[in-house]
Image 1 (tube, protein in one colour):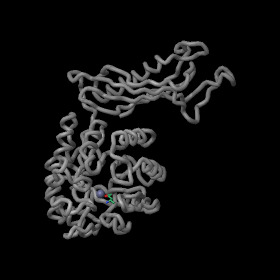
Image 2: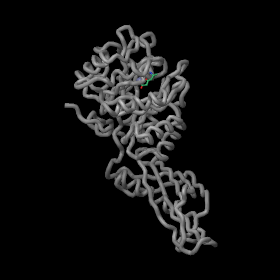
Image 3: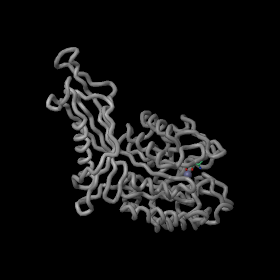
Image 4: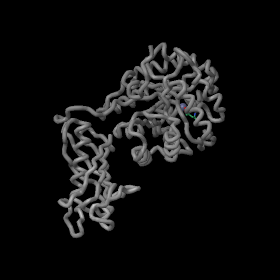
Length: 409
Ligand code: KMH
Ligand code: ZN
């Protein structure tokens, strides 16, 4: 959540020689932005408890127009961490004449700060916090039966696992398909059987993979997009860059990505943009600029793939800050941590207002040395963590609303 003020520094604000404005004025404006965020989020002005850091980076003068931006970076039960930035966007040109001013081509950052605000529980009047969508990645293309006997392979097994996951709190099923012997397949026919089995048993959003398995052609990977009518998926993944994927290469050429995006759009499906690295956000920016994907944007940060960005809170904060920098406001994001990072990344995403993905595609263990008996126990573990931080778990209808997916007849 973000709030922005634009305000002109007047001659009343000048405190020092040469029309210089004092730093306390900027802190007051950060306080106003914090207040707006708390009112929007909690229905209460709250209290500013402490600044963790304050940096004054450039002088501010009477006549400057400042843009003050604040966003909530972390939610606790009663505390909200925030980050602020003040930028000069218009400057007077006294060197030209006494009323000349310029809109700056590039805003100048004049101050930054981070701090913590508190809204006491008894004062909280609303919950601006979106419910968390739990996605269950129940099959994947890399996990094998040798690694875990709990991996579903057949449409019947996949349908039953989807129901268990939905019962545990999942509302999106990220779907891959396999032959009976476990070989990954993107066959339209097999996906259709899986989707029928899922819809027979569970009210969930079906998100088909167009990533498939490494080495598959784009034509093969995108077969599930051709499903129609009752078997049509609701969403499809969009992998936007090539990368090392463990010891393999996951190839997503630019022209192919544009083609897949176009087909997802033509089918009326909601894309989930898969990001495995920081630079992938720039690839996403290019797609937005090219008009290949439109708002609302939904991103999945898949963190911890060898060859991609690590599954750390630092990496996640960097991604979120970069996302906040200039991508359209109408967007949402989730995190999928690979391997032992799965549940820690759930915790990190929950307090930052993100959605989460768990399941055997990314991780087969519930705890160190303890195999998860399917993806449902991992979904239950994510739901438990959501409830521990006071974050409601989205129902299927809420998930559809958040992702802008029309309800099925
Ligand atoms: N199996 C990975 C190489 C997706 O589903 O869109 C790619 C993947 C991404 O799983
Ligand atoms: Zn996948």
